[in-house]
Figure 1 (cartoon, rainbow, N blue to C red):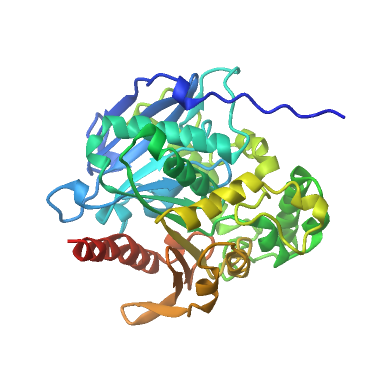
Figure 2 (figure 1 turned 135 degrees about the vertical axis):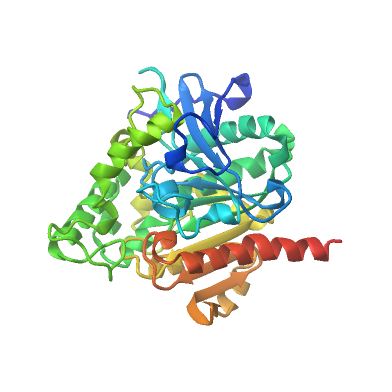
Length: 437
């Protein structure tokens, strides 16, 4: 029998602090991308591994930016960069045409986009000897290293309430990232004020999502094979249901059955490699892509692993042994040993990462307040007198189901998304401060 040897991944504690490259707005040619206060640059998280970040300071009516939380925004895929997708398509100050957005999250929060994992977007590896991540644990190590360097250079942010948000596969990265921050606090003696995480239509327990629209992958033993089947199933759905957008099943698609989510791929990629690259002073040999296929394939074996629970009763025992017990314990660690607020939100119209699947894995969580969770009532929440969804809460775990939204809640229903954030990140923080005075 051949026993697989564990990958040798650099210990962040053994690596000295690297210098970072930082740019600030305004710079030459900055006008096309707005006049808000912002910084960006690269952080070397490992030898040869350079992670790109883009920070927007809030424009809220406050005396100092430190009066509003900092939101770290991670994209999914895996292999999609937040510098483009999250920034220009979802929550940044400008849209894909460089026009000012009616509402941007920077009007209420400080936003930090990170192109993660290394190799995605403007993040890059310097040579062929530098490894790209193959698991969430390795991704978490890089992110922790990034944050340590970032916070050391920006002491003002260390006491600012910190929230980490991730969409789709990015939610799995967020769970790992948050656990590493919490577990390493005593050893590293960092003073970061991690208050919560947000998981948007996140691929937390893929087999339960698949359970809700097919049973094929349940009988598979190998997760890489299952991931291939999952992709094949999605492609078959697109082919067999022309006109149906699997990311939002009431949205229209074009005549070629391409989801509206990807209809702008070519022109958007061109802009990121021309106008945006010039604005950011990114080196010419760094190519921005909408989805990094090398990263996607590298994480293929991790794609269908659950971060919600150890095993599922409806899965063959041969599959259970492949589920990441380590990451399952990470999830339980957050619920049972920290006060970190966990905000799960799901667009009700998402077919692939469907609300039914989200409810399934949340109902099966093994944590100290599981009985309280099952008994908790679903309460409607409204914006301007219109009901935009419902919320369920028990202790530090929340579920928001957002109406009129699919895979990307900010794109489909920004008013509801903003209301959720203001409630949980601003008003809740104010109330906590008052109660502790």
